[in-house]
Amino acid sequence: MSDVVEKPNTRGTSAAGSVERAEYTQKRSLGQLLRGDLGFLPVILTLVLVVAYFTITTDGLFLKPANLSDLLQQIVNIGIDGLGVTLVLLLGEVDLSLAAVGTFAAVVTGVLSTRLGVDPYVAMAAGILVGALAGFINGIFIAVLRVPSFIVTLAGSIGYAGLLLYLLNGQSTLIVHDPVIVSIAGTPFSFLPDWLGVGAPTVILILYAAWQIIEQMRRKQQGLRVKSTLSLVANIAIPFVIVEGVIAVLENTPGPVNGTFLGVPNSVAIFFGMLLVMWLIMTKTRFGRHVYAVGGNMEAARRAGINVVFIRIVVFTLCSAFAALGGILAASRATAVASAVSPTLTLQAIAAAVIGGVSLFGGRGTVWAVVLGALIIGGLENGLDLRSQGTDIKEIVEGIVLVLAVTADALVRRAQSRSSSGR
Image (cartoon, rainbow, N blue to C red; front, side):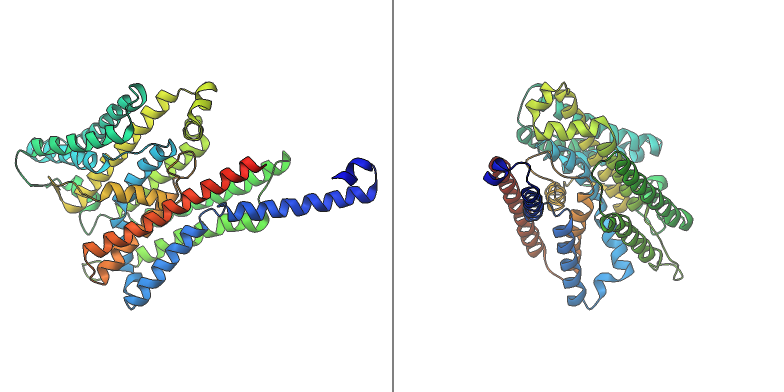
């Protein structure tokens, strides 16, 4: 630096300075990579290891089309709840009432449909509305009255578990008979038509590829930072390979009747449809940007004119609405609603988001993380089931994976904080 001050107009010094800046940039990029700017790479590698291990130890049974179809349907409830959890975690908050709210909404739907004969669409809408109302109440206590979210949602979990017992009136299980509700996820024939199951994802992928290319050209014209050609190709090719590969597997899943092929399950299509909508909302709308801003620094967001109270209420409302939808899909798949609330569903949804890369400290993560996290959680459960392992082993393994994910998140945050303070 002293040479630059003494000879500011020297050509050799200028060249040396350029080299020095280039070396610094390379070192900084490598440092950022090591501090956690790896994107989904660690999660994808973890998923690959899980798949490889269970494929080998189950003699290939894990990757059979029928088992993969079952796996995707099993993770739908975790994934949909995980979408709501992701929004809450982006604010740096937590919601422990997901499983109770989802079961309560399913019981409301079942009671209205089976006991009162209400139209199935009205019954399902009422269940989702009840879930949204539960989240709205949570949001009022948390955002307006400033009660910690841990306490509010824990109390809600206990309260809604009691309410659903009251609605069932001592009945432990209520069978759902309505064909509309059951056909969503509960029968061997609850699958999309082939033209829609293959065509819709392909059209979406083509639009996604076109958007990536247009965005790249627009940023280049404006002189903004653009992706490398390799990165652009990877961003387009990887989703194509994964999505079309999954569809190919699902379309070749044999059914129980005359060797027919089943295709894409309705529940899986609903999950990915909601995922796509939420991704667009979180990345392309003012609301999504405000959620990240509030989670990153609430006080700064408030001073910037963002209605923090409104954002927090809406997020908790959406979270519980997603839980209600997940509960209804679970009831459809089981063709019944039960009085028992899953003791692990809430923690699995939180684990799926965190394992996928959503920070517990707020402000960092994406809704796509839920897919990878849910696949890891569901893959562990499914693989251990194939190996005839008990609940004790499954919960121990899931607990270890969750601790590792949270530890990694904390270490990344600490490294980034040291880097920021050192500049």
